[in-house]
Length: 291
Image (cartoon, rainbow, N blue to C red; front, side, top):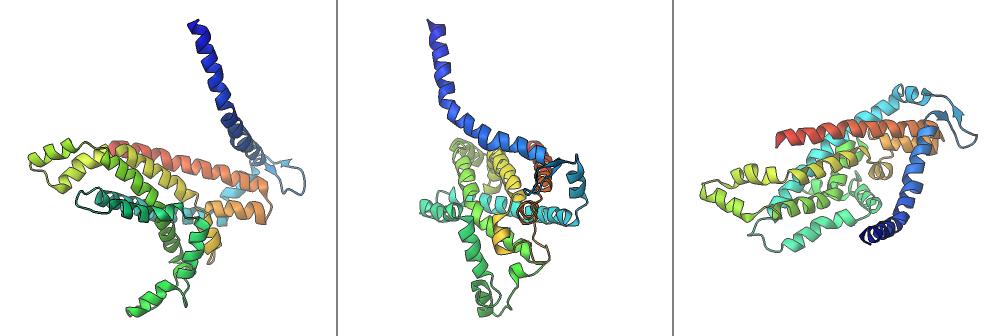
């Protein structure tokens, strides 16, 4: 009797899982398999795929623009990941203080950019960054500082784009870190205070170690997001000036939909997958060893 009931419950469970599994199979697994196959072919949509082996992968690693896009992506990640993590952690610690009133209002204000469309945010910041009519240069003129080129200069374009995406994304990380801080028992801080520990020692020896799982989540997701940046680049810079802001995902898009080289774009996608994998695993181990 019990065995029959367990089998019926298992069957019902799989029945409820079937729609999600079908969606996963149709929209994730099958496209991934097809993309892997296409990465070994020359395919331009206009004619059937032609098998060329690892030719696309060889071309990718000999493509100067792709190599530059990887360097740009790495530069963006170096700005985006620490900037987002530090800002989110600072605000989470600040919002966790008992003396702060109106915490909900501040948290809502910080979270609004997160739920804003990246497309809309990019157009807004594109206007803010205008050299002649933009609000940012207008404010700089009021305090006697000359205008900046922002996204229109080779040296400033990537930090300017990173500033936009950090502003867009830090609210979500702040909420996660604040939830982690609020989950730490108050008794630990009280015991540390009795032992004479100050705010900094409480933060270093209590908050940071116990925040390790949340920090790991924020760090890994930030690394992955930094290597997948596309919308802000596509709308604000289109990879310019002089390919100074083109990224790996932007190059995948250009290769696939501008040049119709779907096979090479598929190879680029799998190269990006392994790049993200290589960068994510050491981050996990480093965080484990540090705390």
